[in-house]
Image (cartoon, rainbow, N blue to C red):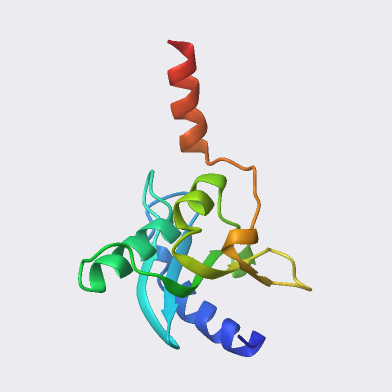
Length: 139
């Protein structure tokens, strides 16, 4: 996908970012066959990429999880794109269903990265997952 098209799509998504009810606002959309489906912001405890893909799967006849070509995830704050690389858990949940992911980086020179999800690595865990693991291990 060309960079100017990514910017146009990201601008469209950035208009939906205020619907997020969390401090770090992310929004994601499934792009399949050149069409945008299921634009979703994150909610407390649920990441935008997971919400967007889950709604896309339900949209596609509610059968077993459907594959999509691209998932676009952005974080937009104070008029700037910020890092929105998916966490370890989202990568694990989506890697068998999403072919490519485009995410904002927060880098002015390289604002977006497109990667095959099966090749994407990230050891970062969300704050919610860290809290849950801390509670489990403390008992």
